[in-house]
Image (cartoon, rainbow, N blue to C red):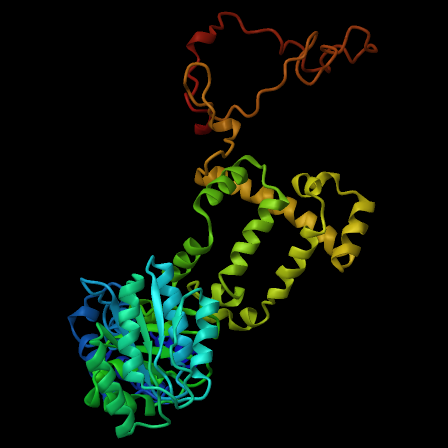
Length: 516
């Protein structure tokens, strides 16, 4: 959603790089480009005016003129002001001192409340809580059934005493749901309420009645980020009519302009707490303003990438794999485990997009095909356990069998095996440099018997009996050379005789041979 805005902001700031000094004209031109980018992204006009004013005031002050790199200082200012618009710091859920904590979801119909209820419950369960979903949307057809299916997929129980479809009292269901949570010892209750096609008095009254009945600790307003400025208008109306403590943005994976996300917090004064970026139950996480601002400016989001890796990689298994990488004992079985863990983190293009500078590789990221990893997985699964442990035994006939079993060409099997050997060798070398556990050190860094490091001596030649290194049979016999080859050439005779009175101890030789 923020791709277009990110491209425009990056281009606007790119013109400042390389300038040792910034004039007021440079700053005004950059601010003009940023203003156009924000307006084209459908950001509310009052928000744009306030943002540009703050950036220009700070950029024209001593903060930039006294900096060693003024361009980077301007980028820093834009980043900080963007973080301020998005909320400043991450807002966490407020849990009740006495369980259960009641979370009420509200919003327009079609904003994704029911699916979000399942995502939120699954996220809470991953945080160590025991949530309960309450089906209080009794108006929309099959809303109760949808929540039951979503709850089953998320592994969270659903309290649905009424069939819905216009039957039942949502206020009574909400009240009974909280009582059921206390009885069954659930520490969090997520109440899914009904929405409307637009803001009306009936929806406001019902939401206010539910809020009064259950006394929620958090009221989350679910906003469809694809509806543009209407999201801000709806949020303002709901804030004035019922009130809410946090905003949840859904459908951030859409291709609509993302100005609503930048506007809703600044206009309503209520922080954005969560963001949903896909249809899967796992496409949901807490909203971090500083990380979102970093991604918009094309600086990546390494913290989110690290957190996702920590969720999908087992620490003990990762340490064991690191030791195998260092010792050169990595197998195709380990390679398969790592590949599956990466696939669980989501699409490869999304993971690479979190790296700094990924915005400059959009064409390459668009060509990344996750099916390639699936083909590699099929090839490895077509091998026997012995072949995975020791790929050296995979001869021509075995490769043909693996190719037939995995539905690929023999060439792809050959490429996988060859690239695996190259990758294992490269990773072993890198492990030695970065001190991975189990990494083998080179001879040059090993200590001798006296505890001193060898300097520039090179590898020790093997000891060979009966001769010198390089001459297995000893030095060659030169006594039987033809006449003339066993003596110095004419004119050079006498060079093998030292001059009279020569004392080698008086020679002044440099201590370091490199000085000559």
